Length: 191
Image (cartoon, rainbow, N blue to C red; front, side, top):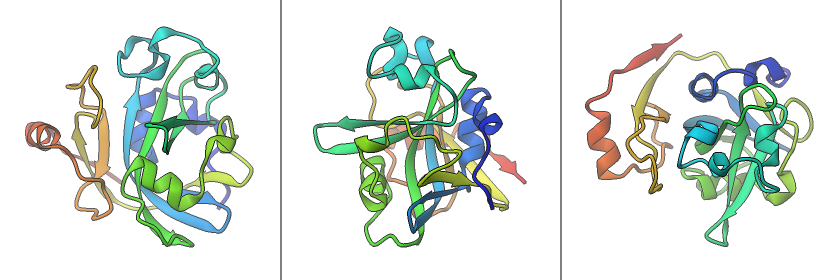
């Protein structure tokens, strides 16, 4: 199947985040199912990198949807984000965990682990996900979505913007706070 088109990404960030679950992330010969994501809502989201506006680092987030925003965290881990929203509006989705399907030998149940397993680095900053070596493809699956607060942040910690496939063993380990909060949130089934 061809990669997702630009229109898929040019929508509200939360919709893109939820709809990325179950899709197939490919890099070269490696492929994996996306099982956990977090939405970052742009300039009004204190936890988002673009909360301070347009900078050299965040320029891709304000650009055309369907591009990769890759950054280095703790000086040792790369994180892969997918740019959402129409051009000029900031918003992105952090890919937190994937289920390995082919060509992956390392664990991929966390943002830094999945980029290491798939060979994603700062060289992929700005990559067009609608074509090229790093792409996301449709997949037909019925799945149950879990919702919780985002993990590992200090600002806007209570927003329920982490989405994951319930029961999937490749979802990263959540904090006790997120797990407790998750018990109070409604479940959705996507067909």
